[in-house]
Amino acid sequence: MNELNDKDLREALSRREARRTKPEVPADFCDGIMQEIVPRRSRRPLWRWVAVAASLLLLIGIGVALVPFNKQTEAGSLIVQTVQPVRTDSTGTPSKQTVKSAQAVCTTTSPTPKPVTITPKVPVDTVAVSLHTDPNLHYAAYSPEEDSTYQAPSRMVEFITKIADYNKVKAVPLMCSIGSSDSTAVSMAYVFEDKEELNLFGRLLQAACWYDSKTPGYLLNFSHQQFFFTLKDLRKNEKYLWIAERIIGDRILLFSTHSPIEADVSSVCYQNYREQLMHTNYSTSNF
Amino acid sequence: MTEIISIDVQSERQRIGQILDGKPEEYAWFVNTYSQHVLDFTSRMLPNAEDAREVAQDAFVKAFRSLASFGFHSSFCTWVCRIAYHESLNRLKHQQPHYVDIADIPALEDDEELSTGREERIILMEEVIDDLPPDERMLLHLYYYEDRPLREISYIMDAEPNALATRLHRIRKKLLQMIRQKENE
Image 1 (cartoon, rainbow over the protein chains, first blue to last red):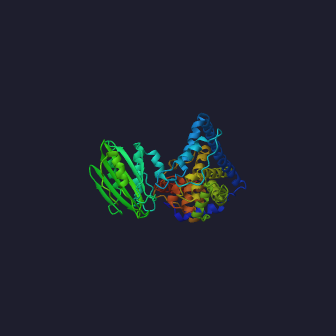
Image 2 (cartoon, one colour; image 1 turned 135 degrees about the vertical axis):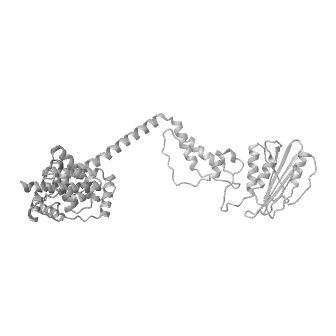
Image 3 (cartoon, rainbow over the protein chains, first blue to last red; image 1 turned 60 degrees about the horizontal axis):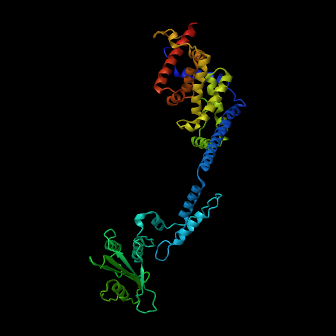
């Protein structure tokens, strides 16, 4: 025999296996393993959690001790301000009341810190909020309504109001309605300094470009001397007119009026006011 | 043939997942299901029953502790057997450092023939198998008795399949020489 026969080898292994007494698993076999495994697994995470909790408490304690109390209240008021709903008035400008209420929360914080509970989140008018934070947007606050492409003509009024406020120009109310008892027309006159840095004509023209030429009542005329712009808001049933004119004394007279579409409004009031400023004639026109 | 453990791999995966999610009661299922097989395995490697039991338990403990790293490349039982095999070898290293090496056995001449019959050869073979070192005995057992594929044995023994095939060839040659020696005695 030069080689081992596989069959013989298998047979020898089988017989050997048959002779062999199989070891019995001791009764405490499983217990021995469990004692090694289960306590270790339960102990480890517990220690970890205890260590983490202790270090967190320590950090919070140090933080509370180091941060001055007035800074804590500032932070608290900031949170309250951001969740306050910013209500807008009919012209879309943020109401002053909202700011006042937020400041009131600031000042009425008691010496003992109270937990700030933020209950249901009120949707914040982000555009209105950003007006306070973004200096580049101080002229145009626009609240998008259900139709995002729709440009409300009142936005132009809002723009003019803001640009006047920014340049500390007072709005002079004028009575332009034909019937003396009709108070639905709102007319304002502004006198701006004709400064290059203000560039009022350019800004008005830029604002006029917000509107599509197919907007109802759209009429735009402008020159170096005069700017004339009309719009109609069919949703609110209102018509708008803006006239800006360079007058003597390096000034720009801006006239803004809006009234119900069916109301008769005369520009006589504007003419009179202009005459007061210029002592010159100005043609009367109905629109 | 050895007792075949029917392995439901999906069930094993689920149970291992439960253990990792913090349900230690599932440990018992693995121990109860595989303890006999693993103990049987270690007792082939270790002549001392106490050693075999300790190594089997250690193998389970080590497997459970590194359960998160179990990649499901094999069944859980095969994985524990792999751990048990290496544990057994470690234990043997400290107990029995000396085994008869194939080089110590006189070379067999090619034309020499054994005159024994088959039954006699099988009996002699049983005897010489017992004289083999435990790792060689285990290799023979896994390959010829349990009919495990070389790939699986290579996983348990942590050796390349080609190396195991060569080793099997050498063991067979060694067995033949040991049988001849016995016959000559």
